[in-house]
Figure 1 (cartoon, rainbow, N blue to C red):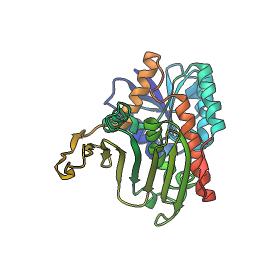
Figure 2 (figure 1 turned 180 degrees about the horizontal axis):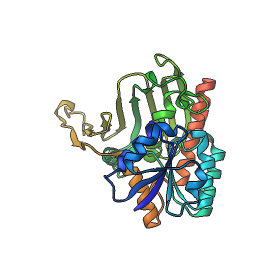
Figure 3 (figure 1 turned 45 degrees about the vertical axis):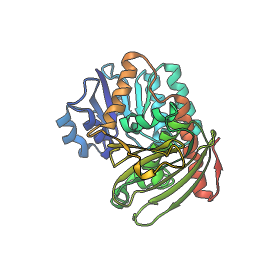
Figure 4 (figure 1 turned 90 degrees about the vertical axis):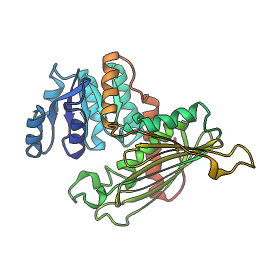
Length: 334
């Protein structure tokens, strides 16, 4: 059992704790740290989490194996370095960092300390996404032409003005920072490195932040992709890959449904006669799956499933998207 400390006990920090509390034999939270202690005391008492006053107390505690960071993105790099120095494994909320230089420095410190670094791209662990990944890699989709993804959520309508999550320095490119980076990671997982991006951003309904984002991407292997999202509407989620042999998609807010629609095998085939294949996965907890994968990597002394080079490339793609949104031009991913 990996004993973890949750750093940051706002909305998402509590989601992380709840995903494994009384549900996991792999990881449990035993300590916590938050800027708003009074707001977290009842929650921590219920979950048997000991609140600490300083990060140094957690880093010095030999009974704590790992840190889980649900903190502002600009703090991640330094906190990862501190965890590495203390020999604590670390699981990081996304984006990993806000620039490539700090991402590389944090990962270098972790590698030197031989700690496991995990990142909360939990969509990778969902069976529907895994099904798409497998069919892309084994050729069942044929030659991939393009892929598209959409994400929508209402959070931007209700975030208070004082929340760090609406600070453009912490959450640039509107809807991309909160959810869109998950889709960028999915596409990197499917197709490899991104060559170029073009981002358009707008504020349509959210009172305090940009809420609508569209990104076009070209991958080094030639695949073209689009991501479109909003954090100011009803919740929905879709990832779709179009190949010469058919369409594979994962849909619904929880990605519960995988659907494959085969392409016609010849000019005489009737598309309407082709029956889709559907695989339904209900109630899968992606957050718990990601945390348990992190715990497994610690226990088995194996790498986390998302390798450092993909983490760094994801940050590079995110930086390019942010720059494109500001300049209104396509940007190469370096």
